[in-house]
Image (tube, rainbow, N blue to C red; front, top):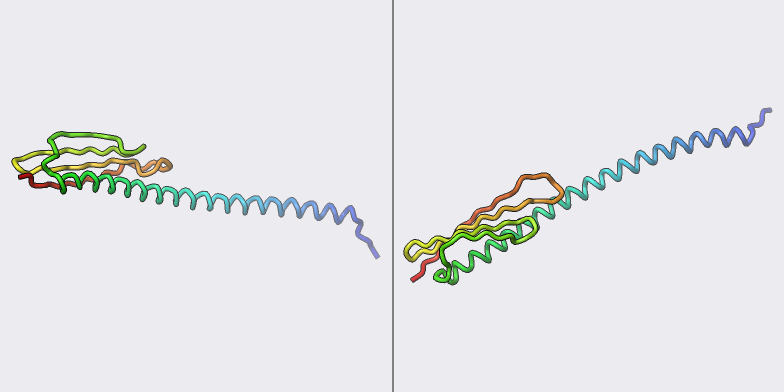
Length: 129
């Protein structure tokens, strides 16, 4: 009857532990990569939605001036930064009693992505008596 020595059992187990550790590291790195991809994509989508909402709010605020007090809008062009990545350009024209406002907003959708700049244009007009 042969007896297996404790040294041979330990040596066989040491080889399995090494393989198990390597497999766990591969699984852990794969899972971490998926979590990083999900977090990055989610942050880009949320940031783009937040930036778009910010631009729409600024445009509504500018449009309200023409809707409620068109006579106070003087002709001219104005460009201003309304955030870290947003430029809002307003162009007011006066033709007779009509005061028209053309707005163009340009923003970078995400600091994380390499997307091109987004643009949104809108226009409104009011009658001044």
